[in-house]
Amino acid sequence: MNKRVVQVIKNGKQMALPVTDAIKINLNDQFYVSQTNDGEIVFTPVQKDIFSNPRFANLDFSQSEIDFGKFMGEEKLDD
Image (cartoon, rainbow, N blue to C red):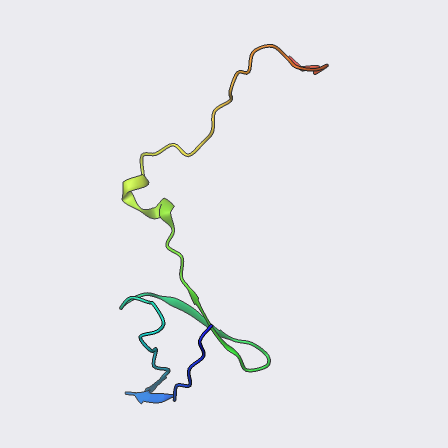
C-alpha cells in the first residue's frame, strides 16, 4: 500500500479529503465513511444490490434438486 499525505480542505460548508490519482475510483462512486475509536478514517465502497437491477427481475435464482439415481448408502427416506 502506498501511503500519501493529504490535507483537509474546505468545500463550501463541508470539509473534504482530496483523493489522489493513485487511488482508482470513479466519479460518483459512493462510500460509507466511518471513524474507529483510535481516529482512523475508513472508506468502504457501497456495494450495488444486483437483485434490484431490472435486468435480473425475471431470473429465477432458486436451485432445483438433481436426481443422482440410485441411493449410494443406507439412506432412509421419509415419504
